[in-house]
Image 1: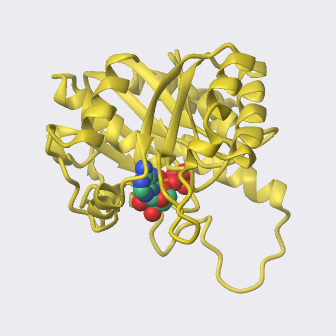
Image 2: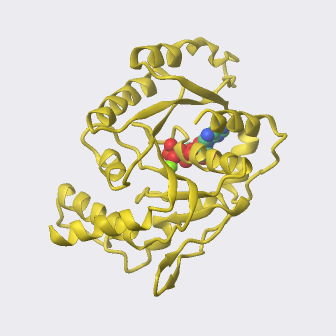
Length: 270
Ligand code: ADP
Ligand code: MG
């Protein structure tokens, strides 16, 4: 217990130079949390903010790859671990840098460990990681949380970040997504996390087989925002071209590109 307290004090000390700390979450996986986090970080950096990006998805940390930083690592110094710097001077700390072959959470062969225990170990690894990273002075820190909703990891991880300004929640237009997302908003609020608003990702697409557009779903996210009393911060269209540039680790940064302008608008609202 004492070690945990000391680590949390250390995390707090490491983050004192950061003005606004935000998490991006969603109950559901694959809705575009990472895509949203990375693009909002880039958008804030374009608005002359000093930005840090924290990727705490233990099972699929993908932020370094998206920003062309895969294979890089933290620079160990006597003062702590310095994060590598990505496009637009964003400092990136990812569990990807931490999970080497000797990682305590990467198991080979059959394992005789209960999921609860494994979860506790993961939380320990994340806390240790946060206690090491040196951020310096930043205007914003954005954290990309793993998927999961009620009684799960994301709210616990959010609890590791001192003086959290709030959470941005990502959803997609489908009803399946909004159900899970609603649950995660409720749970986050129960944990005392302020939810700032909703981003609807993968809006506006056309089905290749029936040709129908997802305007069919229109109103879903608005209805959810109304029920939860949250602002809709913006919508990001399904944009294969933009997403591919991140999949390849060569992110498109052109601020005149329409979807990037959408991210700029959302960044202006947070
Ligand atoms: P999550 O972090 O929620 O699991 P990701 O951000 O990794 O989701 O996105 C899942 C996949 O969907 C990725 O391959 C990503 O490139 C793609 N994707 C995300 N947002 C969009 C979008 N607006 N348009 C097209 N593809 C997208
Ligand atoms: Mg992700």
